[in-house]
Image (cartoon, rainbow, N blue to C red):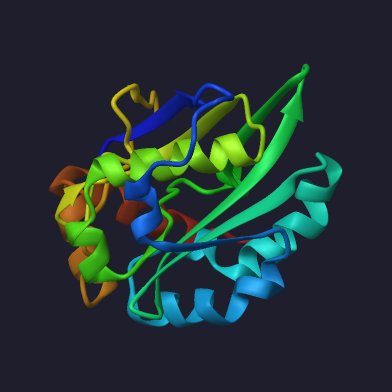
Amino acid sequence: MSLTAATALKPAPDTEPTPDAATLDITIHSDLHEAAAEWRELISSGFGNPYQSPEWLNAWIKTLGAEHRVEPVIVVGRSGGKPVMVLPFGLERTAGTTSLSFLGHEHGNQNTGIWDPRFYAEVPDEQIAVLLKDVCHSHHADMLVLQNVPEDWKGRKHPLVLAVATPSPSPIFVRNLSADFDTLFRDTHSKSSRKNLLRKKGICSRSTVTK
């Protein structure tokens, strides 16, 4: 699975939020705890990853986030009265530039957002792109920087991979884990590699510690 780093400029200052983005009920929180209940509800039944749980990111905000003065921008989308999307963003200011990016993006190898499965499967890329521009505009962000977003995820091109995305230099590889270690060991190592590792294990087990 290849990853991409997506960057998009915010809309012009006189751009109004478009009607397409308004078809979702959107709220934006600066406090993780305000969105935590719906966030956990969506994680329990939807698509996401451990690096974007409220617990993980709350710890990150209190430590590394506080050190870099990152301001949380938690985007929660609802449809039919239930949460269908959580995008845990943050504002970062560096060298006179304000950027909107995923909280803790540099410490997780995948940044996906949290999604209701049906909504994720059906939402148009264009609607998400408009929403992202509107969030940038409302928070005076100069640019949107989305790093380590999987290009293909859960059966479709990820809607956060924008048209201006560029490939990440560090792809991630995915495999299903076997039920036991021996099977995994055989599947991931050649016969000669297994033999060499077992030989080394035997040497280590026969070694004695001397003072």
